[in-house]
Length: 261
Ligand code: ADP
Ligand code: MG
Image (cartoon, rainbow, N blue to C red; front, top):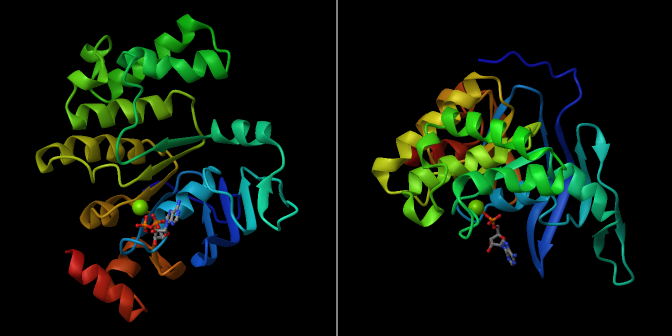
């Protein structure tokens, strides 16, 4: 397991985050950190707020209150005239997002681009990397996720497991400081889950920092340096994998975990 230091500055630092959708108070004061080399798994029932928390990390959702710091840089938020929190500087958000590699449940590859084009789009067009350099990194990443032979294919011709491995390679292509995974295997046929989990496990073994929302409990127990159980918008239990899975303080966490295995 990668060594971590809780004294060092976290890559992701969320403080007392609240988020509403209309009258629905979805996140109720969540604090969360992920340090260099940590694999933090977020578990909890459907609707507990896991995706919303992940989406607040990369500002796909704007928190109503609380702070989001990425590598020590605080995202500037301010209230508009209607009292809603808004992003102050869109360029700051763009910059921060390139440090976060996001992988969604449904792959979200660009269907009109080949695999290789999917990987080099952001590095060349947004980050201004020379095309040849971007291609070299893309090919190395495709080899790493075991899919180099598909580089000129379009996403529709790949299996779900292959598409998700491309999505992981694409997220890595901006050399992010942390990878965020939102149920990366939930949309896959059961026989394709293993190939995607293997890629994520390899990344964890390489020391890649990641936040992982998953229902794959055995996997989370194996790879996580920290596990957080979210219940109705609050962190109900947090600790090492063995603590949360084998000896949780919270009865709700115990019931949830037992029901999953
Ligand atoms: P989880 O990922 O743990 O299943 P979510 O974060 O997706 O939970 O959702 C938490 C709650 O917030 C759910 O009740 C969901 O319906 C609601 N919610 C999420 N996104 C939106 C949205 N954009 N608009 C309204 N309600 C939302
Ligand atoms: Mg979700």
